[in-house]
Amino acid sequence: DAGVIQSPRHEVTEMGQEVTLRCKPISGHNSLFWYRQTMMRGLELLIYFNNNVPIDDSGMPEDRFSAKMPNASFSTLKIQPSEPRDSAVYFCASNLGTSGYNEQFFGPGTRLTVL
Amino acid sequence: AQKVTQAQTEISVVEKEDVTLDCVYETRDTTYYLFWYKQPPSGELVFLIRRNSFDEQNEISGRYSWNFQKSTSSFNFTITASQVVDSAVYFCALSERGGSEKLVFGKGTKLTVNP
Image (cartoon, rainbow over all chains, first blue to last red):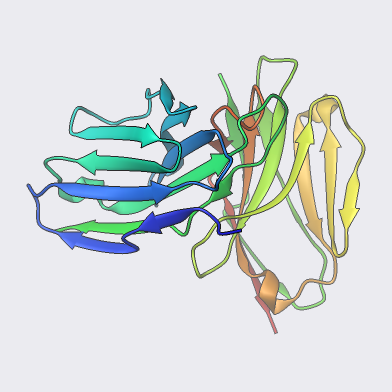
């Protein structure tokens, strides 16, 4: 079975441009998570969905960030307008979302550079 | 609030040495889950192990072993007879209500195994 798929793998854009990151979770997984990794802040959760519904978006830095999950097999994270401080690796992860301690499976990440 | 501390920022060992990576956590919940992930130089996050708060039994998997002690809020990871391929950043993470909920990560420990 394919793992979590993210696209693009690398994105270079200029400040002020809109950026859209995409994620396809593992089939059958009910929870989806977006994380951001930077040297300064490490790995931090931005938002997560359960059964396509956003559950906790307290980690979304500001209104410039938005995330959607229109169906069980697709999610987007959008930054508009982008700023240089948004440069980071963005990971998408998914898991079964059932009660109990299910591990999260991570995608390969999208490395975003905002010039 | 949840918190995970990995006090060792970087560790360097010579191949075949044993090495222990420390993880100390804070939580107010009585039910929680602990995880270790590996991030090799290629950048992906690889799940290694999970443990729930009710199971203090230590675990061994090949050269890897984990020591969970609730009394000291620690979940340490030992690699026996380290190999160059073990070089990576290792993250300890905590979830308070199972893997469906968000993971709080430590800052990671960068392990370098020299030949």
